[in-house]
Length: 277
Image (cartoon, rainbow, N blue to C red; front, side):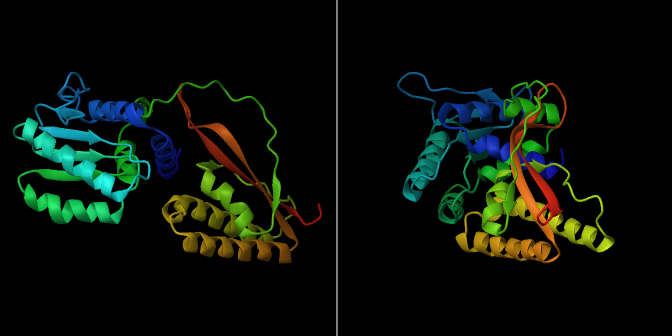
C-alpha cells in the first residue's frame, strides 16, 4: 500500500473512535513513540486522572486525549484550558503538553491556543495534534507498529464477491465512490482501444484518483466539492463524446497490503466500456 492510501486508512480508523476507545488508541501510540518511558493513566478516586491521560516520566511529555466529535467551540476551548491548567498544577516540570483529538481542530480553537494559552505558559511546549497530524505521525512508524496502534484485526483471504457497477454520467454520481475509497483496482478498458483512446482513458482515471486523494481535504467546503464534481462531469462528457462509458463501484472491507493483519478499507473499481456495449 502506498503512503497516501495508508494515511487515509489510518484517518478512517481514528475518526470512528469515541471516548475510552480513542484514549486506548492514544496509549498504544504513546507506547510506540516512547518505548520504556510512556505510562498510561486512568481516572481513579476523587482526584480522577489528575488532568493527565498518559505521560512520559523521563521525557516529561504529557498527553490530553479528547475525541471532540464536532462539539461546540466554547466547550472545546474550555476543555483545552482546563486540562492544561490542571496538568500544570498537578505535575512539576512539564516540558511538552500535547492535546490529541480525532477531529480537525477549528481555526478559532487553534487561534485561542496560540494567542492566549502559549503566552501564558512560555516555558511549556503546547502542541495540538488533530486528525491529520495524528495520522501523519502514525504513518511515519513501521507497518507493524501502525497495525498495533490502530488495532487492526486479522482477516482471512477475502471470498470472491460480485460487485455491481453503476453507469456514471455526472461527477455528483461518482463523487461518493471517490471520496469513500481508500484505494483502487487497476481499471478495465476495451481491448481494441486506439492510442488516442488509451491516452484519454489514462488521463481520466488519473484525474479520478487525484480527486480521491484530496477528497478528505475539500469535503468541509460544499463549494469545493461542487467544483470537483463539475470538473469530473466534464471528463465524463469527454469520454461519452468519444463513444466511451464509465462504470464504477466500490468494494468494502478489502485487505490493503499483505501480512497476517492487513488494513481493511473500501476500494474503487473503474471499468471503461464502449457506449452501448
